[in-house]
Image 1 (cartoon, rainbow, N blue to C red):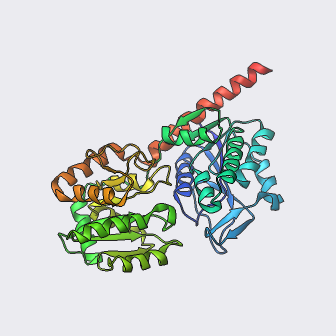
Image 2 (tube, rainbow, N blue to C red):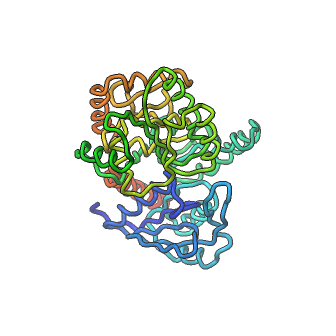
Image 3 (cartoon, rainbow, N blue to C red):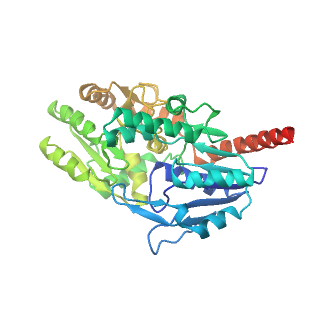
Length: 393
């Protein structure tokens, strides 16, 4: 990055609370800090947690949301935070969520007369519909999101499918497509990692391994996966399905596992040590991810780093970039079709291995490369902003 910028990024929750959006902002800030001045405006978190990042972190007062198990920032209740952020100098401001902290940062951008952009990470209207069960309330909420995003100079999306979501809310401004990546390096020592995984988890060498990594929540549709796997078990297939992560649905899914008589096939690992994840990704023959909720499956890129292909739902955002039978698998949205696609994938191990190698070739991208593209776009937006302001004087 040849041009040094003063960058402010912010969102409503942050580390040590972790999800895909937090992961994205943290990696952006980390890689941008190499050659730029980067500030993160985020909420305070657990007592005793200390920030140890290569970028500056300014935290505001927050409340703990038990249902989501996250700390949520409330800038209105923190005058010191507001003054600290307002006193800073920025070339551009970048927001990653649509609530209290970004609303404050819009005021900062106006006061500082600098461009402000946002990444549309999550289709909040889907979540609101799931909670409210009301079409009219969801439509009203969606319109409010559109008004919010129309206050930004530009919105970043990871794909045309995601752009459709923000347009459906009523956003009329400019959109730029920017990819999301992983901080995991692409690996070639897959066989060695597989051997370590077998030893660590006591997996028979020839056992077929399926994997899920992420939050254990309703919208991830792990129950859908379990019902599909029940079909495969009844057909005589022998496999092990590892579920990595924690969440509110864990207890319910464990009950479902027993009801489906999958106890011998499914193991809930919860959160695992960071060093165990590469072993799991490498050892997995197939990554299963039927989510219709995710706008981008970061785990798809992580799995690709280890040449592990995934099976997704056709026309879903999670499956964007996947070509069925080439670098992954796409199934219709029902238990039987998903089970049939998994069966297709695992029937020929050599073909599956080739498809995994293609996934590494086509789907893998490191956060460093993503951040380079982001920095380039920042510079273009800043120059456009300054030229437009100069022409109006």
